[in-house]
Image (cartoon, rainbow, N blue to C red; front, side):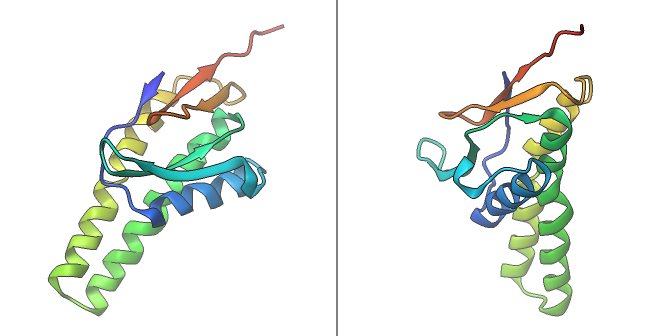
Length: 130
């Protein structure tokens, strides 16, 4: 299992994961569930279906590519403490995704990734070569 680090998640961050999973993983919305890990007060998006490592990598990086630039742009438009905090929170919330992405670099792109339903992280099902 690969664990996610960082409790700095936002519902927007998790929604981006779901939208990316629907697009890159070609999954329906009903394949995702949302909630909060109450022990760490961390919102989560759980995918009930397995996706390829290739698609999962894209799903992991999508919040990094979308949310920090949005909030940093908002910071330039409206410089204030709250926009600074949102920009910092959106960037720090991506750190766990980056760590998982690094762990997945050594996996083959057609291996299967399964989200852990009751904790942050994922499992990899390695496809045997024929």
